[in-house]
Structures are given as structure tokens and as C-alpha cells.
Length: 390
Image (cartoon, rainbow, N blue to C red):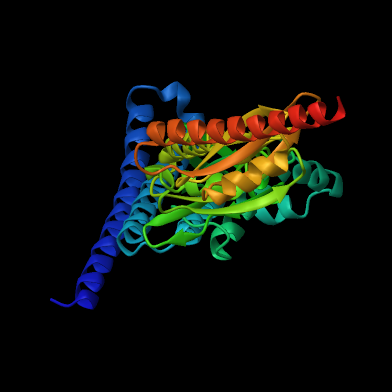
């Protein structure tokens, strides 16, 4: 059986149920009229003058019950179609409710012989009062219709609601859009009801982008500017939480740098754990990069994985230029990075691969030998000059 035939059969089944409920309602009205007449004439004759009013009340109650019964059937049908096709049929279900409510109101008023035309032709003051009374209701109702009919909101959208009515931006997944309120499952796992007038009339909505089965959630995090951001990002990308995350340098202000991360999640309740893991990874990366930095004069510099920065200080009784020349002659990468009244400070860049401890010991002894030789030469020069002068 084809899909169109199945839908046609299902539609006929729904219409048949609606007709049977209407027939059942009419039958109940007729039977109730006979029952009331029988009871009043045989058991409560003193209440016979109230028979018309009793019939009106019973007919109104039956009309309401049957009408709501039919409304629930039609709404259930629309919602089943919505769940099956993943299409937004909220506007249709809302129109079903409104239409049936208006029809029921007209039926109930006609049962009590109330003229609808007379009500509509009422005083202007009554209209103004009624307008104020239903303003909030109408606002919520219309916003709900416009939201779904225009495609602004769909069931299952993950949005961030930033309203000037409350200060905290709320992020969550739309799980229901009803007549007056919409339900949102927040990232904390709570379900909140937001009036449609607030959700769409007093808020800025950000609908998160989707990449396949994943939503993209932007997060900004601040990192102290005393460490190069390139090193922090390189270290952070080694973490499992940020391996497939896009990370950008958003801004700099001299004291702090802002990293912009595009995190991905499937369920809105995963957001807190994902943000926590990402921030932990950035924090750990920052401290790894900072701990690998070396004092360079009065400030710190950052090293890399294959270079170790060794600082060595010698007294100023040997010229710093001679020390650098002798060290470079022995293939050492050496720089003068600081001077004081009594000491010169040198930076030696070493390859950190292999046994770094033995390498450090060898270079320190090598520099010590260079210094002692140069000092001995300097002392001999001073002694020779003293002998000649005497």
C-alpha cells in the first residue's frame, strides 16, 4: 500500500471519529432533554418552571465536552503528523483550537439566546476594557502563530534568548510552542516556560548553527597576555576536548587575550560539560606554556619543545665580548641578556632532545673553563702591566 493511500485511509478514519462524536453529542442532548423532562414531571414537579434553564445548562455542558473531545482528536492527529514528518504544524493545531473554541462559544451563547451581534455592537468603553483585558493573551497567541508560520522558531531549535526583561541570557532547546507559552529545555536540564510575547516580542534570539547532527556553540575565554597565544593554542589543541575545535584569537587589550572557540554538541544538556572541558584544556595549556618560559633580562620569554634556554652569570672581571667570542668558537649559541654592577648574564640556547641533564652539565663546565681561561689571561696582563710600571 502506497504512502498516499495510507494517509487517505488515516484521514478518513479521523473524519469518521469526528462525525461519530458529533452524533454522540446530539444523541446525549436529546436523551438529556427527555431525561430532565421525565424527572421533573414525575419526581420534582415544583421545579418545572426551571426546565428550560436546566435544558440550556445541560446542552451547553454537552456541547463543551463534545467540542473539546473533537478538538483533542484533531490536535492529536496534527501532532502525530508533526512527529512523523518533522514539519512544523503548530500553526495548524493552533488554528484548530481557535476555530473550535469560537464555534463552541457561539453554540453556548446561542443556547442561552445571547445575541453575538448585540455583543459586538456594545459600547466603545466596553471594547476598550475588553481590549486591555485580552491584550496579553492576544499578544502571546499571535506571537506563537507568527513564530512558527514565519519559521523564526521550530521545534528542536537550540537558541540563546537575550531579553531586556531579565539580565541573564538563557540557552536551551525549544521542546514545545503552545498557545501562550513556549517550553525550553535549558543547558542545566531545567524546563522553563517563556511567554510567547517575551520570547519573540521582547528578546533577541540567536539560533545556533548546525553541522550535520551537531550544533555549533561559540565560547569566549580570556587568557593572560604574558604568554604568546600561539603557544597556548598549540598546547591546547593537543587536548582531546579541543582537538577538533576551531580556536581563534578574538581580541587583545595588552593585559588579556580573548580566545574564541567554536564548540560542538548534540544535546543541549551537554553544553556545561563541554565548556568546562574546553576551559580546563585552555587553562592547562596556558600553564604548560608559562612554565616553559625563561627569564630574559627583566622579562620572560617562551621556549619551544626542542630548545632549552640556559641562563649563566659571570663576574664582570672578564669582558663579556671575549666570553661570547670564545663560546661561539666552541659552537655555542650564546647571547648577552643582562648586565649589573658586578655580573653579566648570558643566555645559551640548547637542544632539549636527549639527556638534557648531561647536556646542561657539559655546557656549564665548558663555559666555566672559558671564563677561567679568560680570567687567567686577564690577570697575567694586569700582572705584566704592573711589573713594567714598577
